[in-house]
Length: 342
Length: 143
Image 1: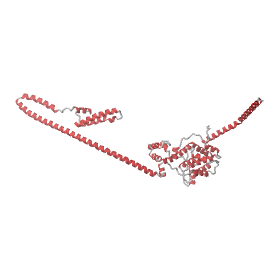
Image 2: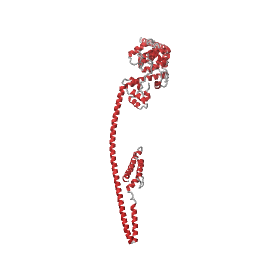
Image 3: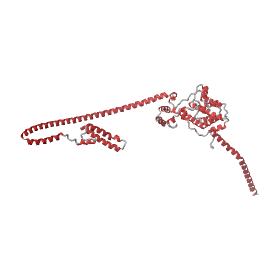
Image 4: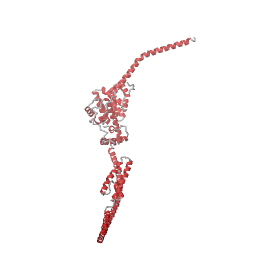
């Protein structure tokens, strides 16, 4: 058993001539405290008026101070006393007094909405009865309390709501415009860079085309030269043949051995010259054998580039990435070389 | 009336920054809009906090008085502010217990006071007699 001191309200209750009256007084004071736009003196006078017939026999000031301190234990004690002692008749009269105290001008504060409903539940007053009583006393039906946890409540109750919204919207617009301008600037920068890059690429392509053109021309020149050579050789051969026939006419045996040697020489000249060393190495880098076509080279390059691209090794160690980029560079060099010369 | 603090999972005494963070990370767009409307302005938050305190007090009272399922306690309020039943004993019973404890202490004191009074009177008589005797001895010796 606790030997704690008695709280102020317990002392008040024990000294009171009528415990129910003291408890009711505290509950009414609690309702009054939650009434808005009322001064302290008005509250006290109103409480004194409403509780004139009460037989508690003590001052009202301590009750008001307890109600102001929102002492939950005292309110609980008062509620228990009231619930224990009150019959139906007394319950209705308490609700009646509470409504009067809460709404002198017909306006019920949000907190009092919930307090009145709590008192009605405590005193076992049905919702229908409470509604009728409220309507009789104030002339307006008891509405459901408004909800300040919603946007709509502030739309109607905050006079600054729309101006504030407009200001916020203007600020958001401003921010949006700034962001837009910045994005546009960035876009311009990017376009400029892109154009520069494109120009460079075009130059490079032109360079490449020129080089290819040159290579083709030189090849054609080679071919022409070869053809001319071949023609000249043919001429020479014809001439030789004519000479040989003339000679054969002169001596049959000597001419046959010379013809054999000449045919051997011409066979060697007709086979293609072996590809230079660098081309063969580039082809082997791409995993191809000498004699691969241009299309094959391109396909091989794409496959190898996919396999060895450094971005594939991004999740692994830095060393792997470095190795992969070295490999990739080698493959790319080989491909570039082959594309230029092939 | 909904408990926005509970729905945003922040304590009611959280500062503005924490609440801004919780509101920004809220998934429910309608709830986020309402929370922004309430918490963006300090005055609105004050009003909301005052009502929130009162309603949570009522929720606590209802839990202690066994009124968590009353006819007037329905909807959002009942969902958000009802607490699990409290097993705290009735304040009235506790007061009656303490009063009866005080009364029994008082009674015991009243009961014990009579014998102690006798003993005290007896001791006082012995004391007076002894002092008188001593005084007489001191008075006789010089004579």
